[in-house]
Image 1 (cartoon, rainbow, N blue to C red):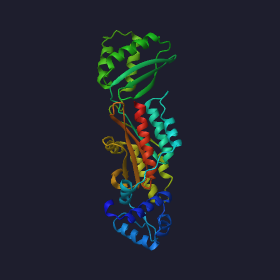
Image 2: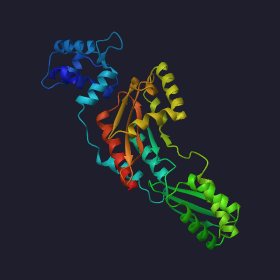
Image 3: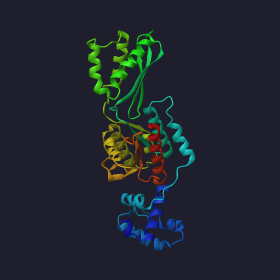
Image 4: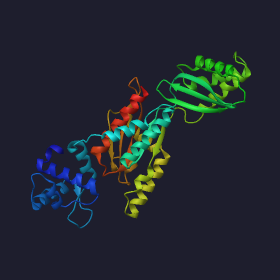
Length: 345
C-alpha cells in the first residue's frame, strides 16, 4: 500500500504517528500544519487525513477533529515510513553493564538485561533463555563452606548455571574432585536427561569407582538440574506493572489485566516468540495481528539471539502499548539481542 500513497500522504501519516507517539492524543490538522516543512494549510491536510481514514490508516476516536493511526496505519508506518533513531551512549552503557556475566549465571545476566530494557523503554521486558536440554560442556563442584557446595554446569549453548548443594559438613575435597571427574567423563557431549538414568543406575548398583561421599555429591548434583523444565525454554518477564502506567479508561485496565494473566501462563508468549526464533532481525507484532494482543492494544518488539556457532537459542524484547516509540525501541532491542549473543560467544 505504501506505493499507492502520494509523498504528501506519506509525510502527513508520518507526522500524525510521530505526534501520537509523543502525546497519546488525537492529532488535528493544525498541529500537523505546524510540524510540516514546508507547511500546508489545515484545509489541505484535512483532505489528506480524510483519504487516509477512508483507506483504513486513521480513525477518529470521538467527535473531535483529531485522528489517531489504526493498527494498519502503524504497520504501514513501521514497515515503510519509520526513520530509525540511534541508541544513546548512556543507554548502551546501561544495557552493557547489566549484561556483564562475571559472577553471574547466564539466567541472572539475561534477567538483568531484561530489567534494563524494561526500565529504559518503560515497557514490560521479556527474554527466552536457552533450553535446558543442551549438551554438557563442563561440570564442577566447589566447596563454599562447611555443608555447602557450589555445583557449576556449563552447556554447549553457553548457558552457565550454579546451584548450591547441602552436603555433609567436613566433606573432603577429594570427594568433590572424584565427583567432578566422574560426571565430566559421563556427561560431556550428552544432555542431563540422556545421562541421568545411567548415572543413577550405576550408583544404585554400586558399579562406580566412587567412594560413598563422592557418590552422594554426584546424586545431589544430578538431582538439582533434572526433573523440572527439561527441554523447555524458560521465559523471564520483568516490569509488567509498566503496562498499567498509561491507562486512563477502566475498560483498558481490564484488558491489560487479562493480558497479564495470559503472560503469566507463558505458553502463548513462548509460541509467539518461536516465530521470532525462526526469523532474522527484530520482529514487530502490533495489536490484533496476534491473538495474544487482540484485545489489549499492545505490541511486542522482539529479536532472536544466537550462540557462538550462530545457532538461535533464545529471544529478548519488550511488550508495550501500540503507540510505542518504535524508532527508539527497535534499535534498543536489536542492540541488546546482539550483546547477549556476544556474551554467549
